[in-house]
Image (cartoon, rainbow, N blue to C red; front, side, top):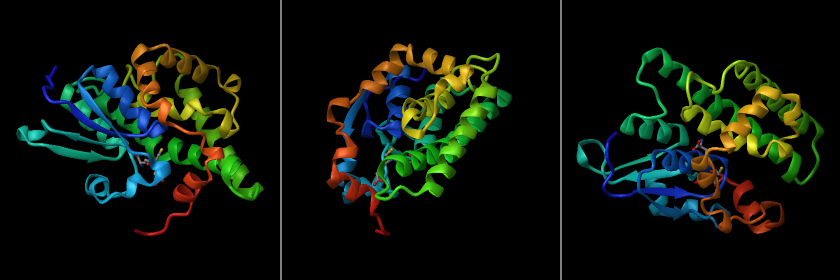
Length: 233
Ligand SMILES: N[C@@H](CCC(=O)N[C@@H](CS)C(=O)NCC(=O)O)C(=O)O
């Protein structure tokens, strides 16, 4: 495996998208420096952060030992997982068929499960009015997506052929299943996978990272204002 001498800078806040990268770094066992980006206080809008993450979202990384030995920054959790998987040759098979399977499930997560679960959570917990249409639309869509995962996991341990960045990407979004209106008992294969994932020490360490900094968003009106009222920068 490629060795990492200088630590990777991890721009992070403890949320499902952040956990993807803390879990990957813990699984790889490479050195990293934690740079907390307090998204409830608007630190994602700092000009220095926007330079590396123009979408004003974490996670992002700076690898001081990027291609050609020069630093590189990467934003978007899926792109970061792919970058780290390629660089260290782990959790992202180099066999083309297996790699395609990893990418199918990785993109399924970043384009489907994550956004839909996020909206379900939002309409169920945070929308100032209870809008039944929105609640039902997103809760039902997450229910469908959980069903897709449950079927995929029938007779297999992981989403792709072996444990991969696709599993790391999805895990954090299943943690908050109750807030998305889902009952894991309805999805036995998914439940088994979730328990297997949760038992991995690196997954546990990744999930614990920075947890003391996290506040309860439901009670933090200032954070809600920053996160939920955004317009073009
Ligand atoms: N597509 C992005 C989504 C990242 C994202 O939504 N991050 C949230 C926290 S989970 C964030 O930084 N929010 C800050 C904001 O809304 O301003 C990715 O996968 O990296």
